[in-house]
Length: 219
Length: 219
DNA sequence: GTCTATAAGGCGATAGAC
DNA sequence: GTCTATCGCCTTATAGAC
Image 1 (spheres, rainbow over the protein chains, first blue to last red):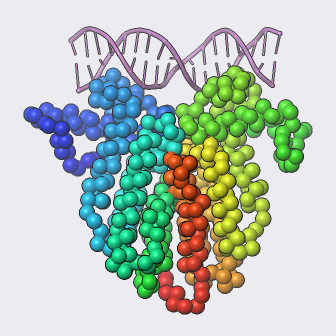
Image 2: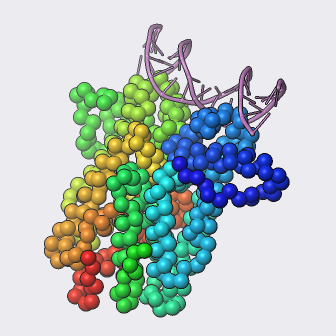
Image 3: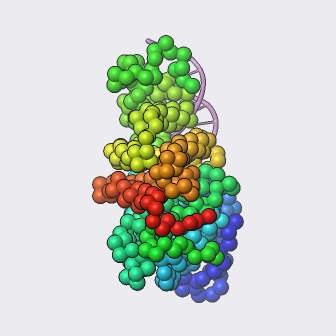
């Protein structure tokens, strides 16, 4: 489905033979995403994942210590990609920050498996005993903190109303994105997730802006 | 459906509980909620549910045809309760409609298992092969339609801005509630879900209210 | 209404061959 | 790096006793 474009030697890669091994590893990760999306963590099966990759369960366990290790690896891998692609530099205005989130939503709509995986795992992880519980607690803390920064800066610059509760807006923004993703997942072909999000940002920004100007033109 | 041909009117027995024979059935439903919450559908186990109820798997299967029947029964039972409690009469204003939703959020925060079950199942059901897929597609359609009605009425009465996209607002409101529930589920003791929702409604209602001064025009 | 027994199969993890 | 074989346990569903 989606090929990871940048095979970078994260661990010290002596001799080229690692490239081959890493590609198999990457294929396992991609396949695991689809399975965690459809089955969640508990009901996913290493044997089924391995079979789809074209190896056996024993072969898969050469690359990952066990099921939990696979899950954590998948989550880490996925989110590192996103961090690089969307959150590597600071937006220069609140409107630009929202535009980045619209790009993210569009990207998510283009990778159904990964998006559905996050829907399912984020929900499952509410159980304190879930192997990804701590991961998601930390993730939401980070994401909301990150989204709060450009809002605060915009308030400082007088771009947004001075009494804006930036963390509340950030929380709400993350919630809306998750909620729309949940609805989108039920009918991905017909549901305009990005359009819904744009409508929301449009009104949000208008209500936070003192002079009543809305979002900039869409890219 | 199982047990339909009973002469006993299980439905609308307003005096707080079930006939003695159906009490076991109700206990199974309650227990199943907790298990579907923690494990989702696929990874839940009839034997574990039965054991917690205090019977065997075989005993449980006397009340429900199989696992899917149990799931459908749980969903139907849960949502009928909510429909009666929260959505049996039409709100008189947009503000009152939002108040009902705040009550619902407070109620959800007070029944962790059921709320987490809906988080997990709604996410899992994105898979078209999931036994609750059609159920959730229908449910979101109904909920959004239902939420749209009082908004349209409020626009007609001049209570809200005439250019309000009522279905968009309804969609967004449902999304926010789901998104906040997802975050709440990760830390139910410390997360003020109702407060967050109230903050959102406050700003939403303010931005939708026509007070005659400088409401910017929008396509 | 609940039990036991059983069928037929899937699970994760480990061990060792090559 | 991948295979096969295996362990012990779990799964849903059915059949029949009481």
